[in-house]
Length: 75
Image (tube, one colour):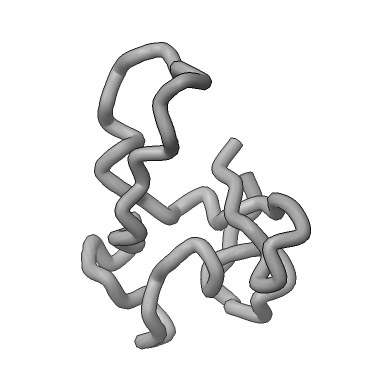
């Protein structure tokens, strides 16, 4: 499951199933000793750009449950 942190950093929430980032394509087991390699650059799997079909930026904070985006798809 994809997870994003809430804006107030209190805990994880589910990202849109269509949100992509390059770390998703690295095929290795997670190592708790290595910090999260996500660089924050994401793209939408529908548009294949940094903008979603609604014209707004695609990222973990904006493409999460409760964001109100009509293009959101739950994992």
